[in-house]
Image (cartoon, rainbow, N blue to C red; front, side, top):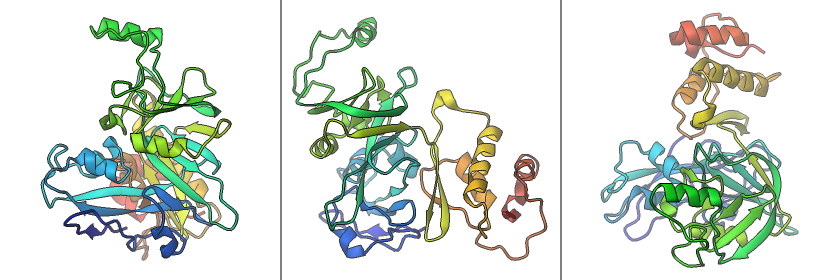
Length: 351
């Protein structure tokens, strides 16, 4: 996987590059799509690309992320050595805009809480290819978790008023920041300009007047979107649109006969022991390549799990020449990870 440095003296140019696992669709058609919109691959699970842009003098890392549809945690994780508030003119910034589609039906809205992203699969018009849109979101903080499960949009409101629930008013009062009973539409309304009520009581998809928090765990359980993104989504969906809320910190997907994994940090309250997480990851990869002639580089898998970058990582061994014979069962892999990590690069899937 490679990235491309994009030169833009006045505006950023986002051009498709030869990223391994790029969309299996005509490039000319992909060029016509807006930012965050992708042709849905006829086969496979990978969309988008990883690329780089150059920062302008006035840019913040958050600004650059938002311009390219990337939330706070994702853009800072992809650029750990760059200042959030002053990247500096000419600094190359990595845009982690390549995604494995979540393991969920490809219709309606799918929210992956661990990834802090929303995917929307609009119905295709006759004669046109199917597409998918993806947007960064904010989700519930540790003490106000975003719920999981299947639901629908039950209400849609433009320029909503906000009626803070008693629990939130109490929390603000205890912090010395009392809230009124109702906040009218306008710049002080934390719901922004659009809200979509879900069938799960008390939970919404809505905009925000604090876009810098998108891509973080900062809400009281609702799904918060950037202002332009929520208005774009609002104009396309309707009451009854299915919504699936999933938690997939590890996604697996295929593209051009290559298996990729994409790992995100586990939600704090759901972290397991490292060996348990690795066991589960190996089981998923083993199941994905079952009955396939496919050499898995388990060292790459371990690295992806230990340092979840949010970037898709190919699992195929690149130099499989005459490895030492090693046991091929799941538990042998686990033992190697625990006791002999230096040997991990020699392990290949034996079926």
